[in-house]
Length: 381
Image 1: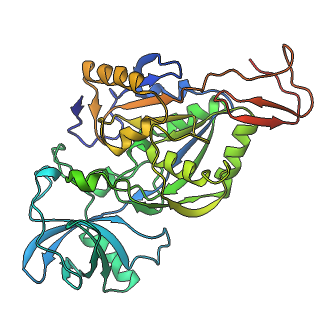
Image 2 (image 1 turned 30 degrees about the vertical axis):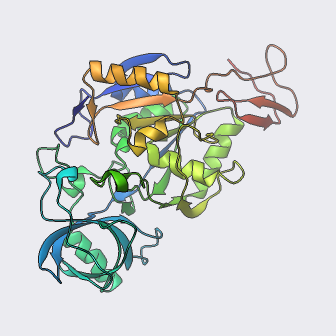
Image 3 (image 1 turned 90 degrees about the horizontal axis):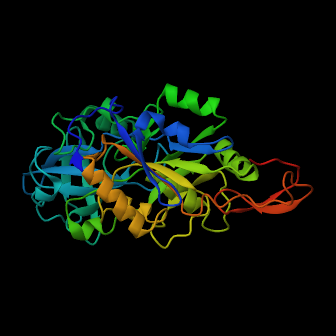
């Protein structure tokens, strides 16, 4: 794969590798991804807007130039912005690869950081010299104003121009909560939403504070993803229940949606409305309860995003997919091409009595093997 070098969310030549439940691989233009869906399916996307989470500044005790990348906070409450977790780097800019950035000066509890118009104090280090909890010494309004006026989106060395905030907001961006763009959502546009509607596919959203994808340090990267707050609207919880009742699939737009929905269902398999913290890591041994397929960017083996894809397909299938992506020179990273991965049990056919209708309250399976009780007659193709 090659790195996407320009921040274009929906290039006309964007491509899609579709991985069916039986391991079949298919190439298609990415704009055609709605054609992979069927009536009664549900698409769920992350509507979080991306924060200007990169703050250039100075470590006051030493006078050293630093960059603090905000990476976590405790909730989505817009008033809960005094304390954050940040990854701190030494001097440099986006033209230097993250893994080549120098370390910051030694950070101690009580150290002051001058971050443009904002002042923050290090509360403690968090088991790594680059990872700190910090507290802004400002009012809530001044913090938001300082982020807006001084902060920048987290930058990437593989992109030629510097990113502006509008480059990293998806078409459905709402509340500012994500630390890096939930970039799978770049594939969304009005035409795609219209195609979904025409096909009888429902659409819903969650808000998930998508975390940073890399810190440049292998030891710290192993701790990713950090715990992330999310919010599930009542309308989305009802849409998921409705899709399951009708035998439809739930398709996640991006890894953050998978993490939110599977975290919400971890207790008893049901998705309830409300706000919580996503603490679970989704990987090869995670039994997926809610999500049946994912539309995602292309990811390199060893990253947390790639590990999540292992919940959908076995390693042999993913290795074949990797070979296709490499051989066809797919673009990777945030502005790259996409993959659609259907969970391996997704084509298990619905179980029904007789050749046609289900009569009375009976238990059957949807296309992804989830047991459902249905109380009305229904015909299946």
